[in-house]
Amino acid sequence: MDNNDKDFKNRILELADRAYREGRYIYSNFLNPSQISKVHELKKKLEFVGYSVYGGMELSERAVVCFGKEEIFGYVPFFPIKVIKIEPRMKKFAEQLSHRDVLGALMNQGIERDTMGDILIKDNVAYIFILDNMADYILENVTSIRHTPVRAEIIEEEIKDLAPTTKAMDIIVSSNRCDAIISKIYKLSREQALMHFREGRVFVNGMETTSNARALKDGEIVSVRGHGKFRFLREGGVTKKERLYVAVEVYV
Image 1 (cartoon, rainbow, N blue to C red):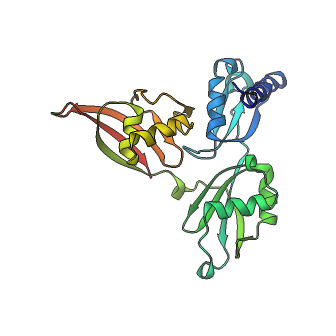
Image 2: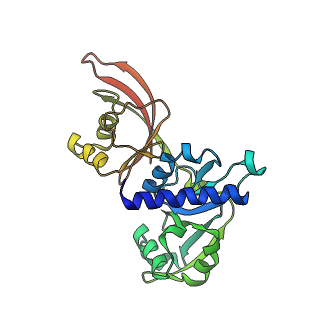
Image 3: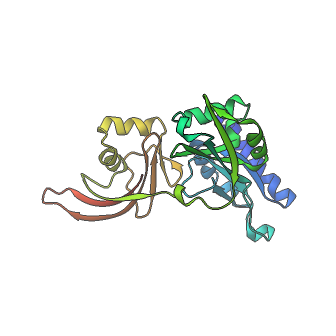
């Protein structure tokens, strides 16, 4: 473990201890997938207080960790996350805005990355998951992105359009190995798939994995940074050439 990993895990344990001592929920800022994986590595050490992970919606990439559980504190935690909708004031004349454009505009206002969760773009409208204590600051200060004037508002209701959609796929692979299935779904060579494992880009149920030969179990969710996510549903039969049918659900 390098010093950065050790320092991060020590901070996580300090937050957990503080929640237990103060008898109340303590929340982290938004963590990226690699950091969330490191939290899961501490699962046994966090059992004394418990923890949960949520980013504002199902399958969020970035998420907040809540230290504590209802059985100890007697009430359900409420994650301090708001959703802000940012859209062009005049759609007819607006530039096409990207994730990078929106993130850049926010960070140019001095907003730290760990106060922001996922940024989703749909029909040139941005939806930003943000710590609730930063919401008003964004409303007051983010008035344009690139050369496009925008307006921002807090969205309280559930945004159904942002719910993940999936596509069922039946594929044929040499075996139920994580790397074989990733290669098939994302049309990667074996070496390209292995590179993702070596560089820490593959997560199974939120846990970073370097075991490319790992056999997947029914219901497990695999995330490959830069490509997307899929759920392994089940194995099927075997072809005449001894290859394996598997069913997956790819998030699109």
